[in-house]
Length: 525
Image 1 (cartoon, rainbow, N blue to C red):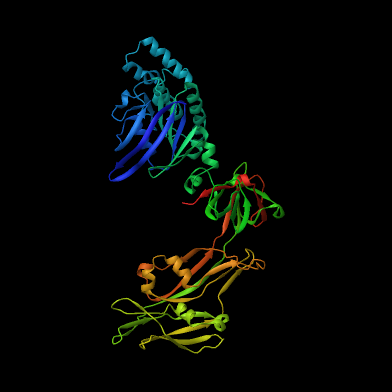
Image 2 (cartoon, rainbow, N blue to C red):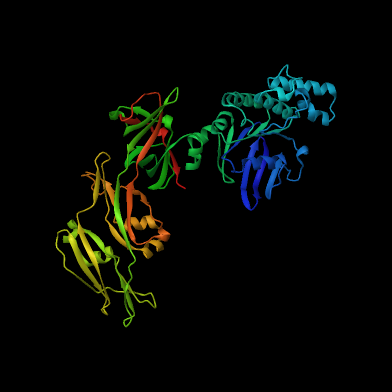
């Protein structure tokens, strides 16, 4: 096909906000191209620049190989249909359609032939004398399309022309517009935020976000092969699961291996797995690749939208005690030393070492003038393998010391036998300064609480760890005050939306089945 419009690095800024960020796009003859995206993504701005109603701040617009940045709208072989149609209320249908032809002073008989042809094309035979303000929204839209097409443009720009119509009429007009485009054989550039419209009508979809193009492709490509989470979520509904590519055609998610049809990733690369709801089948548990419990069922007329939870996630809550603790200072030795109270599992008492005590207490010594760290040379404590509070003293070579409490308690664990998981974490103590100075607080909270999770009863593979994916707390890290705060650590739960004709009941335990072709693998980011 011949390239008709070329956009090269288009940029546009309004009131200091950049709404187009280097847009490049090729549009070919006889294509139905849709710019798809949410409000404010820049799609209408592109349309107005192509039509000549806006001037780009940077970049080029080429039409048939010629730069048209400075060509006024009326000299471009491009017409526009706006959402509000912009019909002349004082003119009837015939005169609205003929308006542009009369301005060009075409012969009366030629005008009549062209208008009649357009009326027939848009299905308005017999409406020539009707006043436009006496017509329905759908009929007015057809008049606007006929008025644009009668001038025989090479490109028709349509700026959300179906937005004002009710659902039934909008679906009818989607079919009509596609039919008209195929009959007249010209390029349509269509703007919408409606995913179904884009999928129904387009030869090519351009998905946009915040002034950038995310993906260009056919409706099938965009739907089945989204390049990122944004596109996958914007085009239809998706189940998106974090996974790992273990090799070509092999992906791991939910701690299991599955065959797929994707290749070319790095070994052990973190990825996201997309499964469309209609690609999942509800089957007996013994036939499923995943097992789950039905959480909700919504009847949609032809099918059921069913939510199946395969893993609820496992959570544990610990207490973080924040104290306004000050370091011990030795002016004569020019030393400071600090440490926190800390918890210790009773089962770990027998394996206790000085290094572990220092690490658990986050004990450290330093020169306050140079900030150079100093060695902690001596620890003093006496401990028994039973629950209780035991003082620990940390001391430098020069004798600067600080004493804190070592609290021995039973291990804090939560088992989730249904999910086959166990999670562990400890209560801990911190200063307000340590919280405020943390550069990665979620990660630090996991470290301070020694939080971890693993697969339960994995006798053959006892070290299968499960990632803690969620850390929740209610305090404001920047303005934290001394006190005790709950911190909750959780492993990731998994829910799948399934579009199915099979009826299930809330609480049913079911299997979920899919084939390798149903899994689409995306790179993260």
